Image 1 (tube, rainbow, N blue to C red):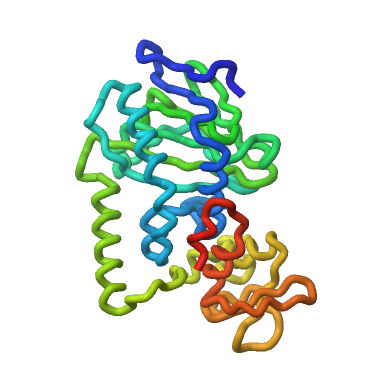
Image 2: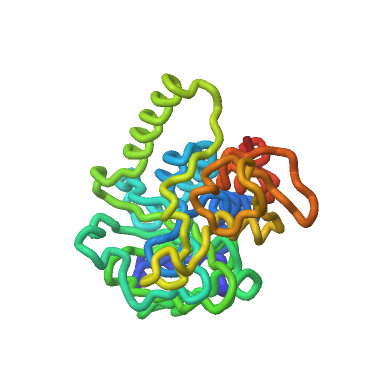
Length: 306
């Protein structure tokens, strides 16, 4: 843990701000619940992600609610610190977890031509180094602090350009979870406008075709398949929804086929029941995502279970 509650000043180069206990333990657990209930295979090996657009697309839009106050609070903090009040929009919001083997070398967050709209970054740590994972320390190439030890509730805010080149050590054990936001001065990249449009289309479709509340729908099955060998495609790997159910102590039984399921991914999109030991739970779930969102432990999101 860094020694002070708030570090950084506009006079420091490179400009960055570290806040401790910015998020409460309850907020961290709530976001962890959403991620472990809804995540897909991420953008790089051994990484899983949950985006707001994905939540809408899979009929999980109630899970957007906890993000609203956190996003606004972070946006206000970034604008105040960098002196750009009312100038910024949120370009991207995502829950990102890194598992064993994941790492990234020195880079800036705008290091590709298609990322130049990203001007500021906020990384919120949702679990803690040493307790929930090993490895995964965050390093800045220049300036102070040099190294961040991720602790649940802490936030790192910095410019997304080459002033804040950084790297993350390889994860040795466990799962390192963050809420990451990028901010832009270019309103053409406003995430909110895109989300509102997507929500409007989804709500219109539901009002016409599905007036009653519906359980979550899975995206394409390959978004949930974790390949142990990229060259082998689906020959060596597992479905991450099923894997998270196993971590919770449940096996899965098809309502239509006999016996327990292993990695029959297509069957996981069909109605199923849960088994723990010799006990078969009578409740039918529409699919594996429905089961996962209902059985994932949570104090705050019980009402969102269908």
